[in-house]
Structure formats: C-alpha cells, structure tokens
Image 1 (cartoon, rainbow, N blue to C red):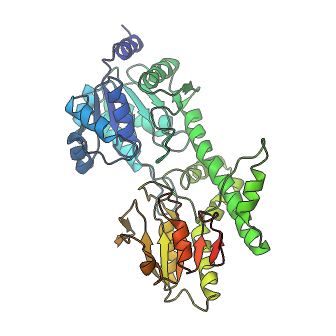
Image 2 (cartoon, one colour):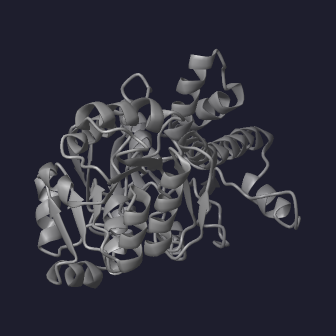
Image 3 (cartoon, rainbow, N blue to C red):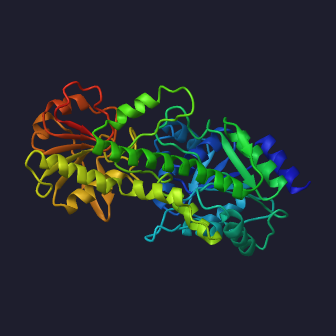
Length: 439
C-alpha cells in the first residue's frame, strides 16, 4: 500500500501511533484528546519535570481534567518522555512549542527549529509532522521542511507528510476547549492535507476546515489574533480620548452593542496578555518587511496596546495626586496578576508591566490574585497577599483592578473607601462610586 493508504487504514483502525512535542498549554490538552479517542500517544518535552508529572498522572494545565489524565496514563494510552529517539515509534507528531519574541521584538523560533532537528534525527518513512505553534507565514515550508529533509534524508511528500494546523486554545473558556473548537489544516500536497484532516477529525469533535497550503493556515492564525489586537487598540485609543472628554467609554460600548449588526464589542484594559494576541502581530509585521511592506494599521495598534501599562500607571498617579499623594512612596494594591479572568496564567500579563511602571515611580506595590499566589517576573519572585480583608485594604493608598476575576468581592472592596482605579469595569454595579474611577 502507499503511504496515504497505510495511514488512512491506521486512522480508521485506531492503530495510528500519536506524538506531541511540547506538553504545555497547547500540547498536553491535545495529547489527552488523542489518547481519549483511542490512539496511543507519546508526549515529548525537554523539561523533565513536565515529563515526570505526566507519567505520575499529575495534571498542571487548567483545561485538562485531572481524572482523564490519571486514567489515560494508568491505562497506558498516554506516556511522556524527554528521549526523542521514541519519535521512531510514532506515525503522527504535532509540534506545540512556544514561539516568543526576542529582546528586539522579532520572532524567536529556536524552539521550533530545535524540535524539528530533534524529530528529524529519528523520522522514519511514512510519518506525518504537523506544526501547531503560531508563527509567520512560510515557516512550515521555508524552515521546517528543509530541516526535516536534511536531518532525515527523506523527501517531503514522498517519504513523509508535512502540514500546519494552528492551535486554538483559550485558557479558561468554559464553552470551547481543544476538543470542540473547529480546526484549520494546511499541508504540503493534497495527500498530506487529506490524511492530516482525517487525523484531526478522528480526535476532535469540532469541524476541520482544510485550506490550500500551510501558508494560508499560518496567515489565518495571524489574522485571528491581529484582528483582536487592532480592535482592542482602537478601543484603548478611544478610552484615552474619552477620559480627556470626560465620557465613560464603557457606557459608550454598551450603547453601541445594542446595534444588532455591524458591531462587535471590544473592551479597553491595562494592556494585552497571553501568548498570542500581544505577540502574533509582530510576526506578521516582521515577515511583511521581507516584501518591502509596512503593516501601518497593525503597527499603530501594537504601539497603542504596548503603551497601555505605562498609561495605566500614569492615570494611577493622577488619581493619587487628587488625594494629595504622589506615586513615590504610595502603597498600591493590584487586584489580579493573571492576563485574563478566572485563570492561573500570567504569561505576558499587562499587570506585571503596570507593577513595574509603578515601582519605577517609587510606589510600593503588592498584589492579590486568588489564582496566582506566587509569580516570577524579570528574575524575581513576587508573593501575593493570601487575602484582602478590610483591615488590610485600609493600609493602601490605591487599589488598581487589573484582572476581572469573578470570585473577588469588588463591592466590598469599594466600600472600604480607598481610591479605586477600575481598569476592567468590574465595579459597574456599585452604586456609591465617589471613590471609583474607570479606565
């Protein structure tokens, strides 16, 4: 049988052996879903701690059900290793590694490159490799393909299949998880696209949408997050203008939402967080320069969003000035360190940058986050408050809401009487608002 026929037969009989490279927020849920659907799965990670946790059935990702992981590991359907020689045992491997920015705000694709090189050394004929990490258009064919071919001595399309299927993970989303979110697939060649789409259809409950090439799928993912970046940039700029005009931007948005067509609500905040939205537009603008093209609208929104933590700190200083106090020496409490509500993820959280800006001005900053008791930032560990009783709040000159966790009693905080800078509009239902200011 041909490679295509062999792979299709293995998918249908559920004898296809799966692999996932990178066991983080994207990779571990994907590995669990593969194993839950009856495919034996090996997770690969260079961090031995993650490997040991998975093999012990101990979960560390919020979107994974603890009992599911324990059962899959104990039944032998899922195991983890840091030894990439086991790549030779799998038929299909998804690369789910970080794609951060370097200190110059340019794509740092070393994790993708290193993973591809490690896989290539053990890649065998008849295998499928799929990149899921968000990256610039062209990565799969311009970077991944040569590494895999040169490292393995195999030819893409003839000896192995290659594709790109962007991850779509929204930590804390109660409705959409990895398993039921629609999937986009782009591959090198029609046979590869068919097989990869069949694999995802077999392990996920969401629709699989196949596009004509990896570059289309790569650009699609960038569009998803750049769309949000641009619209949030617009709202953040309007929030700054509305503050000068003494107009409540939150009321403006609520009014605009009443239109049943042509408007989607986006909200201002102290900045953007998470792995995708603050970073992905930089990948596109970097790649665009290769073609002599400047993404002016995108870059403008990036500049607006990037300066929001600084703007937030400046507004905090204005509020303190009205109480005859300065930031220098002030005690400020940040309410929330996570980058979004109701999760324990603080990757690229704007709250960290707000804290940094406040500290630069001489403020003494503490934080409270019921999901994150401790965090690390720029080589330092910060310990959050264990709780915020009124007796504790009274010792602060300003409370600054940076994350809208639903389990925090914001009305009780407002009643303490200290100035509150509500950057998430979580206190909109509080009637006595004399000490509350919104972004």
